[in-house]
Amino acid sequence: MGRKMLLRGVCAAVLLAATASPAMAGSSAELLKRLHEKGILTDDEYQQLLKQDDAPSASAASGPSWVDDKSIVRVNGSGLGLQVGDIALKISGSVNGFYVHDNGDNPGPAKTVVGGVATVGSNSSAIRNGLLPGFLKIEASTTLDGWDVGAHFGIYPGINSVSYVGGGANSGGNPRALQTSGIDFRQTFLTFGRKGFGEVKIGRDIGLYGSEQILNDITLLSSGTPAGNVAPSNTTLGRIGTGYIYTDFQPQITYTTPSLAGFQASVGIFEPLSSLTGPAESNKQPGFQAKLVYDGKLGGVATRLWLAGITQKHNVVGGPDYTGSGFDTGAKVTVGPVTLVGTYYDGSGLGTTALNLFDTDGLGNKRDSHGFYLQGLATFGKVSVAGSYGESNLDYANLADAVANPALVDKNSSWVGQVRYGLNGWVTLISEYVHTRSKAHNGNKASSNAIASGAILFF
Image 1 (cartoon, rainbow, N blue to C red):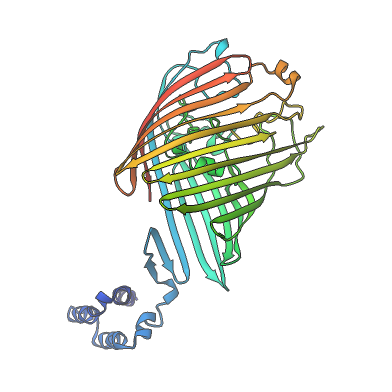
Image 2 (tube, helix red, strand yellow):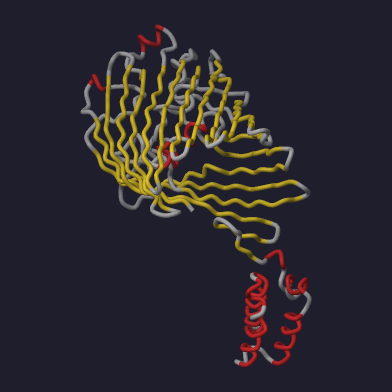
C-alpha cells in the first residue's frame, strides 16, 4: 500500500511537471528513467508510465484514470490565486501597524463636547492599527450555465486586544495580558452576473452611501484622528466624523449595472439600522441606497465623479416615526503625478460620524448634518506627499434641543499632512501629522495633535 501511494505521488509529480510548462515536457521520460534505475519503479511500472508519457496530448493533459483533472491545482497568472478545475480561488490580504502619539487638551468643563472626536486627556502612545484593521479576503468564482458566480469572505482582525463589551470585535480596547484581538467578519456575500446584465450582490458588504468618500481618503491607509489611543481598539477614526459619515458594512441586496460610456449605477435594499442614541425602534421597512459613478479620461486627465443617496424610515416605539435621508457627491481628478479629491455630504436624520449617531433629539425630531473634505496627493517615484482638510457639522433639531443639549457637537474638523514611501510592491511606509478640533454649540472647544508612523502591506 505504501509503495502504491508513493508511486502515485511520483506519477503526479511527473505529470504535473510535464503539463505545467512546455519547457518541462521533454524531461519527463528522463525522470522516469532515473526512477527506474534507482529501483523506485519496477519494470512493469516503468513501461506503463512511458506509454502514458508517449500518449497523445489529450491523454497527457488528463493523466491516468486515477488523476482527476478538475482537482489539479494551477497557479493563476496574477495575485495569490489557484485554479482548481473550473473554479478560481483568490486570497488577498493586508497587515498594518503604527506608532501613534496623541496629545490632547487637559480636561475641563469648557472642553466638554458631546460627540466630539478630538482627544481630551493626557498624552498617550500606542502601537495599533490605523483606520484599516488587517484583513484576509477569500474569494471563489466560476462560470456556470453562462453566469459568473462568486462567494466572497472578508475577515478583518486587529492587532490590539478588545473588551468585546458594547461593540463586539470593535469594542473598546483592553490592553492587558492574556487578551485577544478583535476579529471582525465584515464581508460575507455572493455575486452572480454576466455580460450585458450586470451583477447582483447578496450578503454583507460595504454600503453605497459614503463608500466613495472613505475609499478615496488618504487616511484609509494610515491613522488620521486616533480616538481612544490610551486603550486602542481595532481601528482609528481616520477622517470619519471629520469630513464624512462612516458607510459601514451592511446586509444588502444590491444590483450594479454594466458600465455604459463610463457610467455605472448601483441600487440596493438594506437591513434597516436603529438609532444609536435615540429611543427604541421596531423598524418594519428596509433602507434604500443608490450610487452613480462616472469614470472617464480626456487626454492625460483621469476623472471619477459620483453621487450617492440613502433613505430609511425609523419606526420609533411610542412614536413619532421619522425618515433619515441624505446624499454625498464628489470628484477625483488625476493629472500626471497629482491627484485631487473633493467631497460633500448632506443629511437629515442621519447624524454624524456613524450612521444614526445623534440623528435626532431623542424625541424623533431630526437633526440636519453636512460636511466635506478637500485633499491633494502628489507622487514622485517612490515618494508621495499628501494633505487634506475636512469637517462634519451637526445642527440642532429645534430650540428645545438647543436648551436640552447645550454641549452637543457643532463641528468636528481635522488637518492631515502625510508622507509615504513605497518600500516595494507590498510594503508602504507612512508618517503623518493630524490636528483635530471639536466645537460644541455652546462654545466649548477641544483640540488634539497626533503623529503616526508605521507601515501597511498589501498582497
